[in-house]
Image (tube, rainbow, N blue to C red; front, side, top):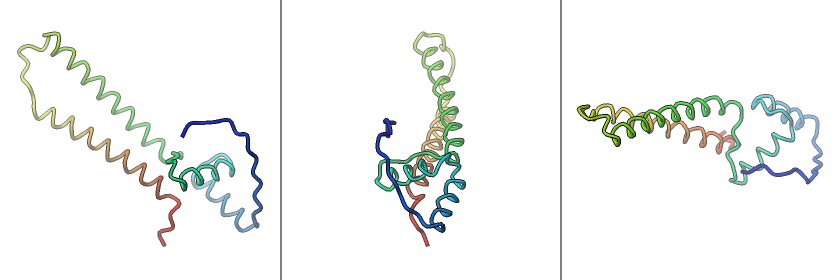
Length: 125
């Protein structure tokens, strides 16, 4: 969801017990403010998420970094093949299958992050 200027002020009355629960959620998900936590809950509950929280960002960033490195390597290989520089280099189907497995693994990691984020507010009890 694209960032937009905050221009609506919403006042919410909470009892001490509910306020403590909200504070606990804010700390658990390492969110800076209670307002940000409530916005994340609303966005995801409405199906407009996921809004990645700190616990998801590290693994997501690492996956993006690895996928970008893989993409650079594939581009270099394609450039060498297309320019004729790779003549005499045999096609390695095992290597290509390993690359495809790596991409599929990345897709599973990203899908898992998205599903965990979507299901974060569902009470499974």
